[in-house]
Image 1 (cartoon, rainbow, N blue to C red):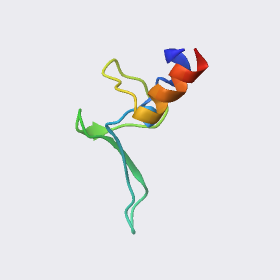
Image 2: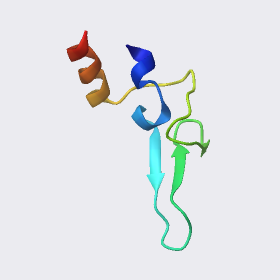
Image 3: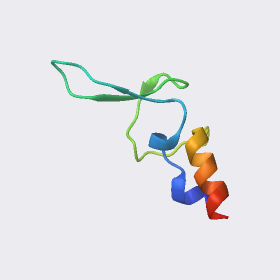
Length: 58
């Protein structure tokens, strides 16, 4: 179940920074560097809504 949701976009530390001049930037607030929504790291902490969805699907 976790593998269906495990990616940076579903992590509570994932940030989307929209700049008026530059492209949209995706960052990990916990690790402090750029990432992409589809990347996966071992430090994944799912958002509350993702935890709820995983619980419902069990």
